[in-house]
Amino acid sequence: MPRYHYTAIAADGKKMRGSLAAESPYAARRQLRARSIHPTTVSEVSSSSERKTAFFSFLARSNKAQLIDFTQQMATLLNSGIKLTEALSVLTLQVSDSRFKSAIADIRDRVVTGESFTDAMSDYGDYFDVIYISMIRVGEVTGTLAASFSIVGGFMQKRMRVESKVKTAMVYPLFLMMFCLAAILILTIKVIPSITEQIVKTGQELPWITRQMMNISYVLRSVWVFAVLGVIVLIVWAVRRFFKSERGAYLRDKFLLALPIFGPLIKQRVVARFASTLSTLLRSGLSMAESLRVVAEVTGNVLMKRAVQQSRERILAGADIATPLRDSGVIDPAIAHMVAVGEKSGELETMLKNISENLEASTDVVIERLSAAVEPLIIVVMAAIIGVIAYATILPILEVSSGKF
Image 1 (cartoon, rainbow, N blue to C red):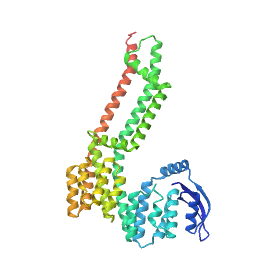
Image 2 (image 1 turned 120 degrees about the horizontal axis):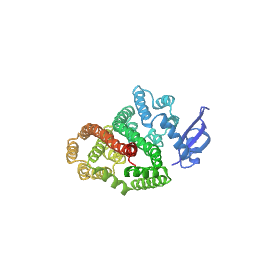
Image 3 (image 1 turned 90 degrees about the vertical axis):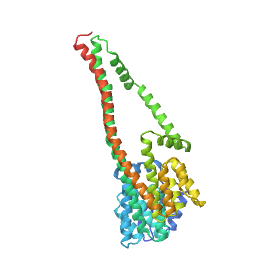
Image 4 (image 1 turned 120 degrees about the vertical axis):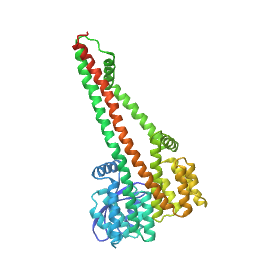
């Protein structure tokens, strides 16, 4: 659904601006008038301007970080006895990101006119995903918004902490690879040609390894490199497009889970995400069937998604949820048995929480060990490549100095 920027005059005569989602400019104006707001200008947001605004917003601060702050502050304000509309007004003044501030202001204005809080949030999917809205909706219906915001804030903070551990573990190896690749390119494109040209002028025949490095240097400095890069980009684009299809996503996830070293790690992360999300949704008061519907949308793995969907169908039919999870191949039989035990004992939420905590702890250990093993491996491989380049560069110089012509 397209989005529209608007400037308008509120019922109290104050000028205001914001954005909303509507099927057409007429529908946008009708929404504003229904909220006792008189629109003066309504213009559709172009995709390019949305990307540009989102880019600068990302540079200022990530959406996740500011959303966690918003959620925690909402929980604090509501727990203090402040009304929802007043809390939104306070946070509108505190938020620095213009797009997010506009979204909060629009949500507040719509709540003031009697619209459902979560219905207003649903128009801002860039910030509030299906998990967020589903959990807040429970709090809105049951009158426990403060508790729902507290649960959502804790869940998001925990998820961000887990993701940051993975990203932090990847920073140093990626930086090391980029540095070494830059050194290889400089040696290949600049150093080798300048040295070999001087040696060729002396009439000396270059060694075989030096000639091969010269051929590589020639390719990197010629227009052929653009053809190679174009082919690589085309292949990457085709592969990504294929992976977006249902069949491609299934094959990708199945391949990733079958990897010898990283497969078990990916499987643990998928299962931990499933257990943590389902436990949090159940704790927020969502029904089992609705919780499984939400989890299926955010599981991040097609095999797990199908297993969760089958589990939901079995729940609706009055059966258990553990059997489809066990048959999926993603969840180990031991974990599936723990889920079955928790389901039978009525302690499924607690059991899922324990499973997620144990898997996350195990994943952290594996990531630390892999990081400790990958870093020296990268150093050895890159050092070997640079060593070969250096040898190809120094060898003709040594031959010249030793008098071999």
